[in-house]
Amino acid sequence: MPNQQTLNRSATFSGVGLHSGSRVSMTFLPGPPHSGIRFRRVDLEGKPEVEAKIENVAETDRSTTLAKGNIKIHTVEHVLATLAGYGIDNAIVELDANEPPIGDGSAREYCRMVQAAGIVPQAEARETHAVTAPIELETGESVMTLFPDETFKISCTSTDKHSRFTQFFSVEVTPQTWEQDLAQARTFCFFEEIEYLIKNGLIKGGSLENAVVIRDDAVLTTEPLRYPEEFVRHKILDLIGDLSLLGRPLRGHLVAIKPSHAANCELARRIDAQMRKPRDVMQTFAPPPDAAARATPATPPLTAPSGGGPVLGIEEVMKVLPHRYPFQMVDRIVKMEGNQIVGVKCVTINEPYFQGHFPGHPIMPGVLQLEAMAQAAGILMLKRAEMSDKIAYFMSADAVRWRKPVFPGDVMFIEVELTRIRASIGKAKGICRVAGEVVSEAEVTFMLRDR
Image (cartoon, rainbow, N blue to C red; front, top):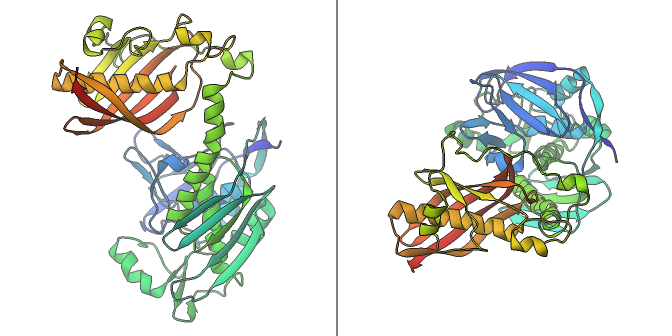
């Protein structure tokens, strides 16, 4: 298994953003093992960071935008494609504006940054994802199918709705083919799209210096096309960047027709779901592989995040919840403000389920973590409405993810936020944490009924 890679030193490039038109300076920096690719806004207080992950994708109209809270990074796909194309696993991308400089519309300037910085291996092994079963996607005009394969290969067809400049290209993506066959392909648009883009506040920094414009059968550019199939090669460039949001290299053969950023990111979400499924099942329903994995991390003190004492002790919790041993999954409430609540479950070896789940390798069942979220949500809704004569019935769960096992001795914090309340129906998003790390999360729906 190959090792992870990062940059050897920093490298900087300045220019204008394609859509914002703002001046921006961008610096590539080395990143520690397992940190992935992170964008850092050095122009903002605290220098906040946004991880290049599919769950942080906020917009996909003509480019891919990442967001975390109020922080946004626009048009990240060319930068991500460059780092992925060279096989760089960990790096920090510093920006003093909300969009990387567009350069000449290709990834050529970014490649020069990587070449100037150099690439170095790291001691930790790289994790890849081998596609285990075909994944199909059809959305809008985009059609994609990802097949299992030993390498990462893309076969792509691009065209417009009038079938102009229909092009096909197929390539196995390696650092060599990335640099030679893909990186210099420039972004392009059709002349009739320009008015729409301008009206929507886009391409403020666009020009024939950083984009190719197609008008009828003519190609408007400051230089000849760099490849016979430059348009479809740029589509492949975008695909590589968007799919890198999975956080690990792919092994599979993607056949794509008329891809778009929206379709690319939706495909990445489906791959991510396939990638997580066996890991979630393993962590939830199987013993850990060795004793080291069972080691219990240090847990934070039993206090509210603000440092205060419990809001509801066990006696108050039992007045609200009808649940009793062995099914009471909330021991106390340490925070309750507005639509948010934080509960605590002290997981001990005396829990009855540890006798069978699993003997010699005790792990808290994932479904009971889900139940803890539902109970905390029920407490919040009942206390908000002061409905002591009601009971909250768990109805459904969506977007369930079990990320890490929970062991005896762990203190599990249950964070829940009500996202919707209509009559007697409530919806909430829940996250369970141990020692600050997410162990499970879900969206739950419940109903209030008379006791």
